[in-house]
Every structure is written in structure tokens, then in C-alpha cells.
Image 1 (cartoon, rainbow, N blue to C red):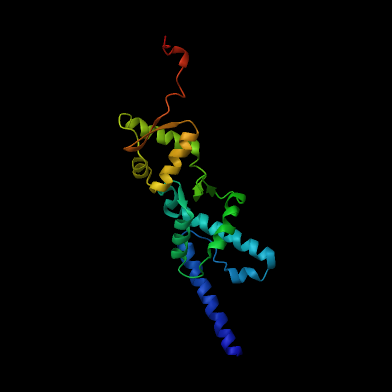
Image 2 (cartoon, rainbow, N blue to C red):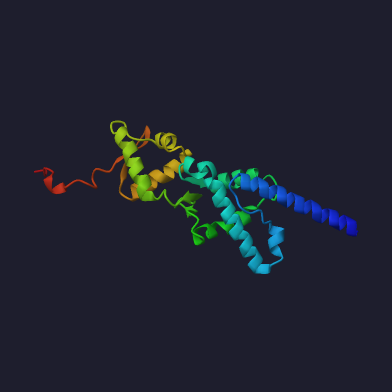
Length: 205
């Protein structure tokens, strides 16, 4: 039994070493497993979730994954990509949810965000609504005659149509865009009412 236990420990150490190497190759710095952290009680679990948060931040920064995805990813995409990269020592959905608040607490440059529709994403701090609103206004100006559709925004922002729609609605809420809903669909335009001086408009007699 002692020999079997030793072989098991040796194998676990080898697996952890291999995982550490894999994670470091992808920009992640620690391979602390949940089983390793659980021995420390609540403090150990907190350390584990902090480690997952740091790993996730490193992973999403590596090769500009998050920025190239338009500055945000849905939790489903984050979970699938992260676990696929790990290969072993996978995290559970609950682990991801528990780790997300630590990204903001540790000031890792990204955080969890939930839209009013209920869609939850991980968003880069540099991609706030004001900056994205400016970008969408610029896109809308290039399509001033026909208006900007969700698919137009999706293609140019390099995000899914679902996330593009959330960004358009957020920009509308900020007053940067307005929309025209017709039988042909919904199109967004620069909100020119925001900058207009209605006192200069001719009044009806």
C-alpha cells in the first residue's frame, strides 16, 4: 500500500509539473489544483479562487484573446476555451463563478459584467461603454444613409450578434445612438438630437 501511495503521489506531482509547464506556455502562472487548496479550509478555497482568477486573466491576455474578441466574451465561451486550454485539472462552472469577483478585487484589468437582458460576460476594463459608444457612433456615421444593423456591428466589432446587440442597446441608453424599427428590421443611427439646439429649429405655425 505504501508503494502504491508513493506511486500515486509521484504521478500527481508529475501531472502538476506538466500542467504548470503548459499553463506557463500560455501565459498562466500557477497550476494550484482545487484538491491542493481544499486542505486549507475556507482560506485555502479563497486562495484557489484567487489563483483561478489570475490564471484566467493571464489566459485571456495571452495573444490578446479578449481584446481580439471585441473586449468581452460570454461566460460560456470563457469556460469552454479555458478548460480546453487546461486539458486536465478542469474547473467547474461554480469554480468560474466564484473566481470572477476576484478579478475585480485583485484589479486584474477585467471583470464580470451582466447586461440588463441577463447576458453575463467577462469584459476588459479598457472597453467601457463610453469608449464603445464612440466606436459605434463612428460606425453609424459610415452607414448614415442606410443605418447600422446588429450584423454590421457584429462584423466590424468582431463579436457575436448577441454581444453586438447588447453594445448597441448600451450605447442607445447613453444617448449616443437612436434606433429606427421598421418591418425590415432595426437600424441604429447617431443620435443627432443629443447635439441639436432645438431653439434654432423652425417652429410650426
